[in-house]
Image (cartoon, rainbow, N blue to C red; front, side):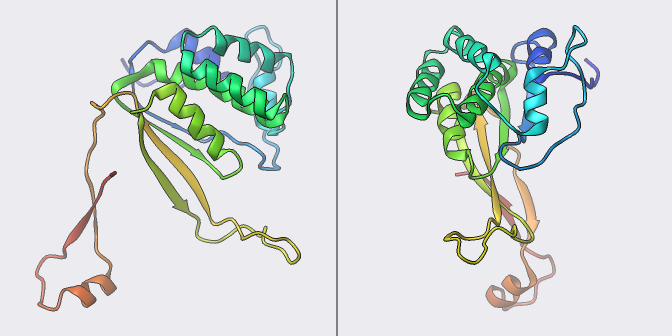
Length: 218
């Protein structure tokens, strides 16, 4: 199969065009509470604006009929753990913006789990606004053994959100969750050179070849 670029609502594309166990790598960075507006990129199959897309690209999620429909789809999905977890979240959070976001994520994560190969990996990039809820949701969708790593991605500079009079630190990192569908996931070791300071501190003898360290998950 050649490379393809799909243009449209990712939920519809997943359901209509992506086969089971066919994807090696999934990376997603869904926006939430970024206080940003994005361009609306496409319309639905009938020529109307996609409700999920409008909310995603305005980054203003609300509990609507679309969220209620997605919630019902998760309950009927056959994934009992995901259904029970989402039901518990709704009982705790109520029908608010965060719950609408998590519901829209849940129905898509179920499809992403379906299309991912047993040897594949999923990386979900998020910030602390919803990361704690998303991890619980991922645990339910991928099972107890699906979690591989929580990666801290540090920005080069912090956001300007630690202002005087507010009792909080500035945001300097995002979170990337690494999940796999099975223990057969492919893992390729990545190597990088030690820093000059590290070499000068710990390697006193002259080196013809710079040592390297391996990046790996625990």
